[in-house]
Length: 200
Image (cartoon, rainbow, N blue to C red; front, side, top):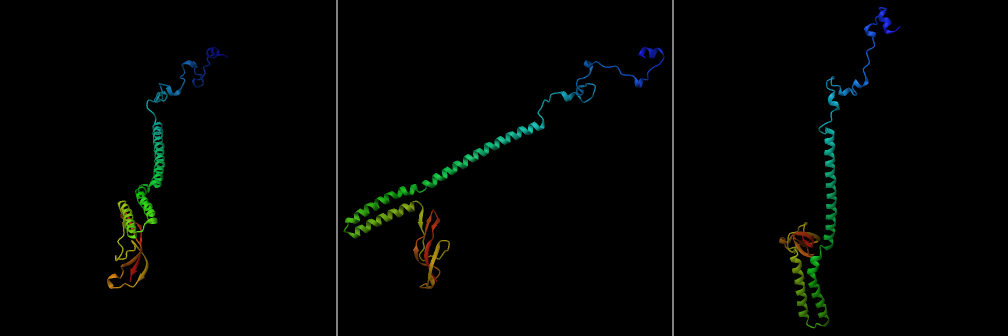
């Protein structure tokens, strides 16, 4: 029995069971989130004008990572450069002193030649003393200083006691009576302790 027969026969289908009329597909919304009749949904399809927080953090992270890598590379280059400079300095540290002592070496060569034919011992001695004083003055100009040891109070920071002997008098007790090897300072820093004999 079709719809017309039901209506003509007085038979009406209840509204709850009535089939709603179909809506053409072209009139249905393609996406639920752009239904203008539904509040708060149209913005979901809009393009975001500003980058999200995550994008900002990722950009900052990339920037900091780049800065870190550059800084690490610069520091590595600095270490390599300073290591090379230090090696070069160590290899040539004594160059200045050695060059200044070459004149003394030349004087010794001449003195040795004179010794083979020299008959005047006194002139030979004076020549050797001149070379010695020249050598000593060059070292002093470079900052070398001899420790004042004899009759000084024994100082374990400066002196190395190799023996103790009875002091000839009370004033010399605990003082340096003699030395076996001189001590030296270079620019006021100890480079060799004096080996001394101490009175007791």
